[in-house]
Length: 392
Image (cartoon, rainbow, N blue to C red):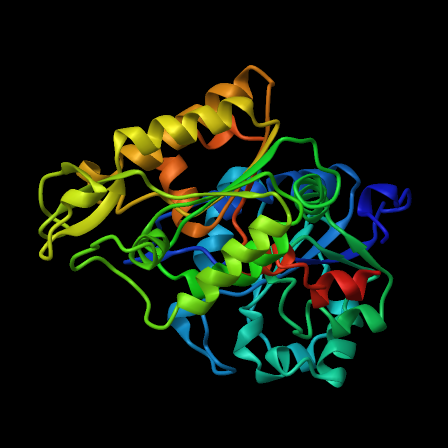
């Protein structure tokens, strides 16, 4: 794979820069800037190298139709302030654009193409559309790892028509994930949460042969507790998971990987209720399991204490209600504490987990935080991502 930092000739070059700026916007305001902040380094790098930058990105799922509510205008305004640079948003039809007409004024350095998903050809990975996009620049840079599991025109097919490189953020993301999948420093542990075990089963299966501990928390742990004969009351669960769970325990035994599940829990009658700690045998039919209990927190903390590498994807409970956030908070704080002492390599990923660590102010206390959702999980499953394959 070619990396942009290895290209020594960027002066005056027009760089087509694929980013993921799919940030939440509510009432015209960006409510989470995490993805914007993470791509500032590539802008600063290319500006310093005196490149001309054409940004390709998207918001939402317009499904090939123009939707003014999904314009990149707010992103441009936000970045203008952060970079102290004027940014031009080009709304003309991409098929009518010509490279020679884009940077007319000498001070023009950053241009945004309007939401690339306004074109159905983008998600169709259309050949002609990709060729037209490529004709607008001198080189292509993919710095959108979180889009790289999509076989879309501006991620995949474009690389057929233009010299292509991996960006700074994409390189960092891949290197971080390699450290928890191939270049492993043991003991290595994975904390995996979320509501559905079926969505994470491929990840768990792929990691069991490589990991020492798989710690299962959150809603998906309820299925295992039920499988082991415990009452889980009205708690969130999936139907017909017995075979999946049986497979997990069988595989873990074959590879000497420990599966850790809650020893005690925190319950409420509703998600808005106060917290009540219960032993597993005390859970009643009208209880909702909404967090892990103190014994479980201590056990997980002890595992983190002896681990050299940790991967965390998914909160331990219903952290939206602070009464049920203690498990997730304590896990985050323990990893952050070990990280500050440089005693562990930590990778955190998943939308809810990122929201959680932002919430408690420890975002910068991990070696790497991934904002990628599907791409993050597919990489951990061992899948070859189309956007990465296209760069090779």
